Image (cartoon, rainbow, N blue to C red; front, side):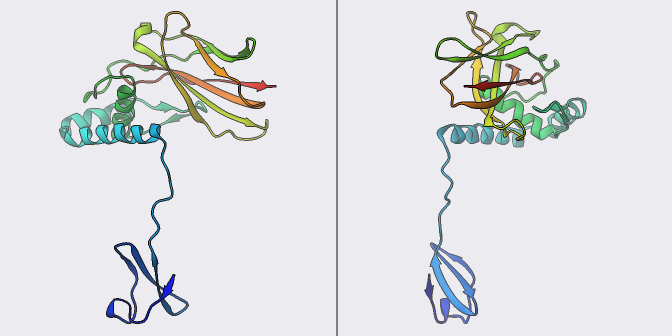
Length: 217
């Protein structure tokens, strides 16, 4: 930070010019280098932002009638969050959510809303240990063919029993004939964990979360 006299040939200046930021601090005109963004995004975050940008550009290119079809879909469908509460979102948000999910599994962007209901909930979610790896298992209750399903696995923890968990996605698992309902976790740190899993249809619609807790020792 440097003190300046008559910044930009004026008595006072505020704002940025190129890489410099001008301001007044306690009556003194100063200039300092403009800091760049500190956030460093992971490769997965960059990829997801790119898919979201493609879905957004697609929404901007469709007709108003097509957008109204998505608004009608939004009026008829809610998105069930991990707490089990229905969340009403806009047609635009449904368009982005569904088409990002579709792209994640190699499907093309679809400009018309899904014509079927979301997949059912999965049940029997539990944590087990076999030798060294830990496994998360569940019971498949999807009504569609296995090839059209994948699963989203979320995890929170370790945390204390009274802490409200911050959920984060741990894995996106494609259906396999040999072990369709098994997620290998490796060697996690000791503590209490909360797990969530839900089936997702290849069209982008999602099922209801199953939830379980487990303590790693």
